[in-house]
Length: 105
Length: 413
Ligand SMILES: Cc1cc2nc3c(=O)[nH]c(=O)nc-3n(C[C@H](O)[C@H](O)[C@H](O)COP(=O)(O)OP(=O)(O)OC[C@H]3O[C@@H](n4cnc5c(N)ncnc54)[C@H](O)[C@@H]3O)c2cc1C
Image 1 (cartoon, rainbow over the protein chains, first blue to last red):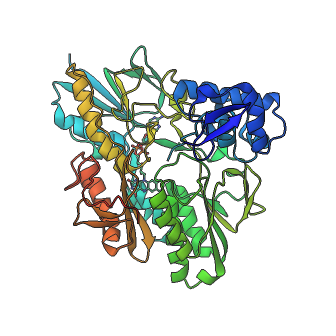
Image 2 (cartoon, chains in turn blue, yellow):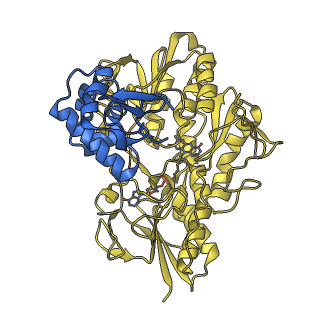
Image 3 (tube, protein in one colour):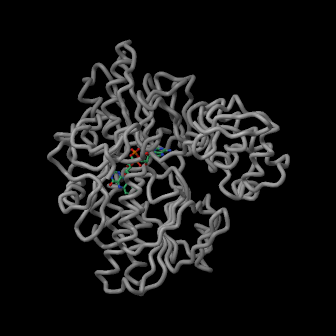
């Protein structure tokens, strides 16, 4: 299984770079992952979403989709795309150190 | 006193559930009530054909209560909310009904007004959906007037019912414009929030290949943010634009509005979360959900409701007999995909197995993931089966609820 190194710690990730073990994530890793995703600075609004992603993962075993995020995180879908232009659900999941959201059919 | 099973919704799933239950229990053992807000049962798969003049709208509608077996109570009322603690369903006009077992089968609701501009200028003129009868009829007239230009078929976001229907629409549009002799004047685009033509790799490859063969442009990861009907533009949340002269949009879907008004019943989108294998609500063992209303990682399709029906009614019987429910639903989905020119393709899959090539239901049978005339006949035969086998809650000949493995090739084509 591939690994990535954030905050001087090697962590297991999947082929697309999503954490496979969210327990290995720590807040200092987030900035570095965000940089890789082209986000230069994590604002309070980014953190609102990142923390929400982790809570949802802990409660439901999967990260929310963009639509569910827009309904429940307190951040509208429009703003989510401003914060995470390359696809909020996937990018925020990556930065939040949780597996890729499963989504539905 | 007899047990009272209340089924909310008399569409595909509610009707087949009530009819199956009626056959399992006689009236002395069990009272069965179906609640629906209107009396018109629309054969939804037929909506695909209306825009192209291949189905007459009035042929798709039958009386809802007449699809229910004798001895089932039919209550015409709009549901206002469910009180899970009191085990009571309240109606909008007043009145209520109590249940011992509740089956939520109120389907999915179209939410076009939740997308900026979708129901604004152009709605019903150059922006349509074929997902309801008025929309499909409006689109038929628009296609009759259409002389050429840019046509975009778009799925706003997931989940949506019948995941293959927008693809089928696109294939049929290609056929229709060719038949009218204007295909060279039409630019066809398929814009989807997915990262390919379909979710699962083998099907995405086959269906994406068909789009390419038919000269349809595929735009992926396009989540619809805004519709500018006057300017003829679909705009995604990441600010990409698809210009159009005619837009065919599958709007956002949510569960029935009363689910939001019923604390503890549904999820953020109004669907009812149930165990994916038993169909039972996690917090309320006497509550089940089936069909489009269920928040499952399965397709929202009539065939799914049919396959779920066996599990659901079996588990209701087990619950009433004081036995544990069984995790017997495997996510089985089966869809004919009409591809135009009297051909269709068939896909068959479940939670664990993606659509694979081969034959269905066994080594000798209909070809999977391949266009054929036989599959087209299968698609057409589905309408008869719907009214005469599926809704009455009978088994489909030769097709069990469990996904067949025989005839499938696991080495991907
Ligand atoms: C264009 C199109 C093509 C399709 N093609 C296919 C296909 O080829 N094959 C296939 O298998 N499936 C197909 N489907 C999907 C299929 O039609 C649905 O998945 C199926 O109808 C779901 O059944 P249901 O009972 O869950 O919902 P529905 O059949 O939609 O029934 C829900 C019922 O609940 C009632 N209801 C809702 N809210 C309330 C309320 N508050 N009070 C009272 N009553 C209420 C409604 O009136 C309705 O009767 C297609 C769908 C569409 C739109």
